[in-house]
Image (cartoon, rainbow, N blue to C red):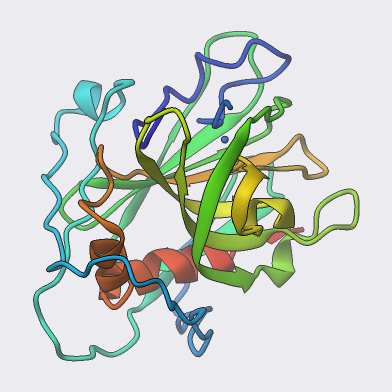
Length: 255
């Protein structure tokens, strides 16, 4: 599926709602960056470097922003200055179990699935209304996947999200390539540790983490293609936007 956004509530045929899975995957609160100081994994990849890309803005029309083919906007800052940590708000899913911290200038809206389907989707947008991240809670779907070649750009522990089976999910930013000429796909979100295994023939990225209330899916909404090459992806990791998205994902907590 490369990096196209799958419609969250319409593609899963098992019990539950769609979680943008890859097949073959509240009151305000001020605080500090929950992932500050988390080191990035060193990248020794020699793939060609390129200038940081500027992603095309998504439509601000509500219907288009929620469409299956919606293209998010990961707009990169050209400033080299290091700003102060942004003020944060806290979003709590309606059932009160899962929460996360996000920049106060960003917004979160919720979308309900069709009648009879459990779960709720939280869509995070930046201050300009561009959709950046989808988080789904309460579904009961699963992942199936085929073998891929994976390179891990970054990973970090998410201590507040221990899975119902005792395993701790992991934040990751990865690229996967397919042997059938299908190109490369970029994924960023939470996953089980197996989705952070590198090399050839590993199982493809799964963005569903089991929880006590049915599961959590998380997916940064990249354009298609996400980046022109791996050098551009690494360059994006030095931006404020990347740091803020990573901090949001690492702040996820299940209570």
